[in-house]
Length: 210
Ligand code: ADP
Ligand code: ADP
Image 1 (cartoon, rainbow, N blue to C red):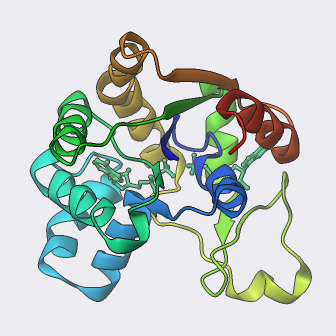
Image 2: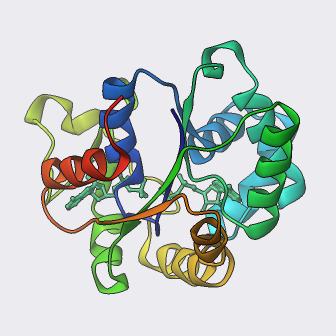
């Protein structure tokens, strides 16, 4: 299965991707995670991306497209992949299509996780992640167990200010990929409000079993 998870920041893409890749046995490819790793390692790509990320801006297409296409060409993604956070602009979606067509492949589904803007700031500012296991928690909605609390990370772009900038970017730059995939007949919309289990069940129903 070759699929994409789309949705505003905080929609639950990372949370749901972790569950779905277990079920579908495909790699979870998050461009946000890849970029954060590059920033941490201090690579040239990371140094270029850092300023955009901290302000809640998008990293330029010229940087992200090559990184994502290279990643889906790796051996572990031959049988399928779950892209999370890519594509995020119309040119990224077109570049992905071109690369897949050139490889004789096509996308199976694009799942849009819908969450109203009014719920997003609370989700983002309360997000914490465990650097050892990668598990995503929320201080209120998915509280971490006491033994991991001290090591949890609060992303520097998970402030209210950067979150609002990311929401504007989402509506201006990312939302246009929704009609693009709708025209291709592969978009499914899933309500992202409810417990994470409920959202997973909706996604599995929408995507079909394999
Ligand atoms: P995204 O990858 O789309 O930015 P995350 O999966 O990181 O979103 O989730 C953002 C925050 O919202 C996290 O703190 C997560 O624990 C919490 N969260 C995820 N799914 C739900 C849900 N269904 N209801 C409430 N909070 C959720
Ligand atoms: P969220 O979980 O809030 O949706 P991500 O972890 O996916 O955020 O991305 C964090 C940041 O990394 C984004 O705000 C943006 O600066 C950068 N980024 C990630 N993916 C892309 C992409 N496909 N295009 C441009 N910038 C990206």
